[in-house]
Image 1 (cartoon, rainbow, N blue to C red):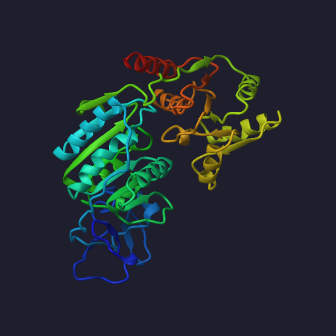
Image 2: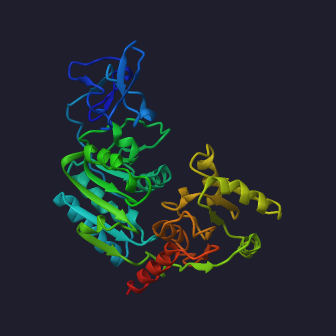
Image 3: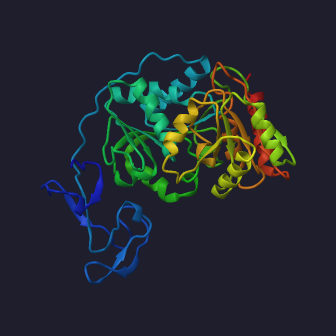
Length: 402
């Protein structure tokens, strides 16, 4: 196993090469994730310190060892993207991104949902590869990683592109372009010269300092970093910022309608009104999926459900993309998913949804040139600050289009 630029447990290595560096897995802190260890019984028949924070990646103990290979990685092969059609606004943002990559700087790209952020990265990625610099495109969620990987593989057909997420067959690999969830970066050290972080405000990245530590350690010392978001936080806005408040097709963002109060009949009527189009219905909790599926099934509506722990979620979302059915979902589909002509409803929008989440959910509607409009409805039994903030920010973004 080639582990240059990576840190892995000793037991995963078949042969120890002379170039390998071996060191304790847990000292006063975990040497993989940085968390503080706890004491407990160990297989070595002693009481050892072990890390509970990163148990999902394999248990690390103070009697265990980690291995890394400090040799330099192989050179990056230059690669160019295929034909690219950008609007004048997209070209402006792409040029700023490209300059930031070449200057090894920092940048926030504040662009509305559906602005076409991914194609704007391509000139910057091509410039990085031409200069022998390794690229990381990171996102907090596996669904976004899979979507980004598909876009990049279509654009950079000659580049080595690796996709990393839970269950990925390419685990621990590294490419000229690596697309990864932020969790998978726990294994990487000083690998990437250019780092793009998509949906930087998304859960869990925005709430987890450990994930931000993984990103920093995976970067080389002089790496360029570009953050992308439609709803950046106050802290992200302190960076040099380029904004794009217009969707690539030039149409405004659909403004959500608020239905207060609502009943199950309201939901059924809306679903039947949009019969013939894919309908995406969001709930805040997994427990609500089965309840609403039962209510709608009793009315003769065929409904599928999907959530983060659903083993069939990839297949369900894939089927939904090419259908005109109804999909009940949690917030796993609030970002990074483009579905032609989708109509969206949020149930109990006054509970469990932040303003940023509601803005992102609203951004699923009207993303294509053929169907630039659509219906987005917030159903609630009371008003919430998050609902009004989401509607206000969408209206403000539409005013800044000119």
